Every structure is written in C-alpha cells, then in structure tokens.
Image (cartoon, rainbow, N blue to C red; front, top):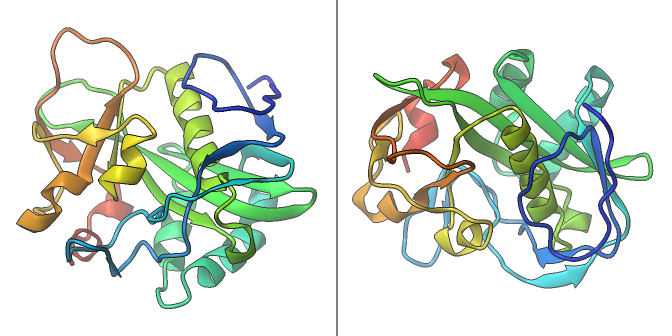
Length: 233
C-alpha cells in the first residue's frame, strides 16, 4: 500500500491506498478510558465490545497511523492492560493478530511511542457473498485518550477497507459515538450470538459502497470471535 499523509480537519471516508496516515492538529470525537468489556453505560447495558464512550474534543499532536507489523507486538501487548486494566483482552488480541489473512491491524504512533491500536476482522454474511468486516477491539493509551486518536484510527481503517472492496462494517458499541463516524443501527444482519434486548441499538453497520439492496442474514466470523462470552453482558 502506498503511503499518504493527511493533515488537519475532519477526514471523511474516501478511496485511496495507504500504509501511513499522519494527522496534525486533528480534532475529532475521542475515545474514552472506559473498558470495552463489561462497560456499563447510561441505559444499563454492559457492552463487551469496543470502547469509545466519551465524546469530548481536543487537539492532538502529530499522529502516525500505519499497518501493524510484528515488531509492534510487544507495545500492543503493553497497551491493552493499560487501557483496560480490569479485563484480559490479550488472548483475543493475540488470536486476531495471528490471523493475518482475515485481520487488518492498525497502530497509531507519536514518534516512536505506540499510543493506539484497532483491529478490523474480515467476515461474511450467511447465504450470500457479502464482503464485510467487524470493528474491534480498539484501544488508546490512557495518557493519550480524549485527543481524537480512536476516531482517527477508525476512519483510517474504513478508508483502507474501501480500497480492498469491503462493502460494509459492523460494530457493537455506543450508538452516539459511532453514529458520528457514520454507523447506524442494523436490524437486518444478526450478530453471531444473540444480544440482550437493551443492547439491540448498539449493533450497528456502515455501508462503504453502493449496493442494490441491504444485506440480511447472520454475520459469520473467524474462530477468535466464535465465543459467546464475547457477545453477552
């Protein structure tokens, strides 16, 4: 993937190739310190997937976003216990990163310091040929939260997925936050495991290209996501 550099402002999803994005003075909704496992938010549902709960605005210094490489593994393994001290996400993260065929791993760095990480997993929808992806987990170092890094990582990942012709992306998370990133509740495609009724609005999708009609069915996921504990409160 060819490198690009992006500077300042809100960046909408658009088609281009990338291995590195650089954001200077990027201002966006930011990712909070709330853990994405067992996170109880205001309507009483404990999400086990994808943090990004608060929605504050702030400036952040230069951020370089690039595809994760094996040399980032140690920093990624340090990041998750710092971002989610009450949860052990490393088994899931390790399993996902070993699945290079189905996973897009992006890291955010300031200088030589890794300050954020996001994973997009290639998925399908039962009984059709849809090209889909699942967003998560997403982590930002505590000292770098509330600076738009989470949003920048997500937007960069979405642009990459457009380049590789992924049609739609799913996420389980706060509708207010992800709505500002282009996601909307999805009642046509079911998650791999049933969700509590109070969490139904948190299951969301975003189409990345035009299609004749919305997809319907059940999301099919690779082995690391085939554990009901990841999808229940």
